Image 1 (cartoon, one colour):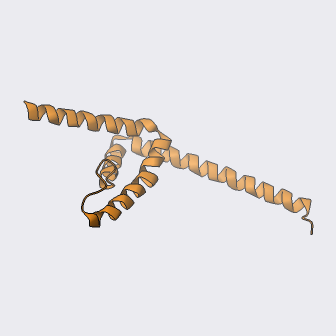
Image 2 (cartoon, rainbow, N blue to C red; image 1 turned 180 degrees about the horizontal axis):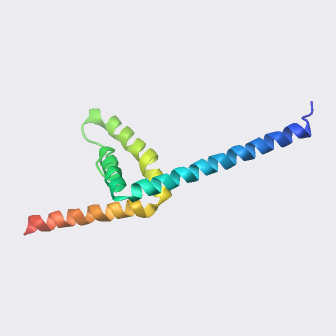
Amino acid sequence: MTIEPVFLEDEQLESERIKKEHHRLTEQFLADVKTTFGSPHGKRVFTFLLEQGGVNATLYSKEADIYRNVAVHDFVVENILAPVVTADEEIYLSIIRDRAQNLRNEEEKRNE
């Protein structure tokens, strides 16, 4: 059984079309993520989501919470943090710098 060359060409064209559309949607999504989370409002929402996901928290506490903490953490890292870092790493780094500065300020206030 042989496959017609026209059929193979149509399959290749369709495959290329799908790849291009997927690339376009990915680029559009990353641009949306960069615009959204790059704004002051977006950074606050992003920080909230990271805190809710326990990205900076200890994963292990009471035994009953271990699986939930790990699952939520992994979901947030893979589905929220990863796209933001992919879109614009500076957004995440600026949030980390702001958080570190706030911790230093709090520590200085306690030591006064």
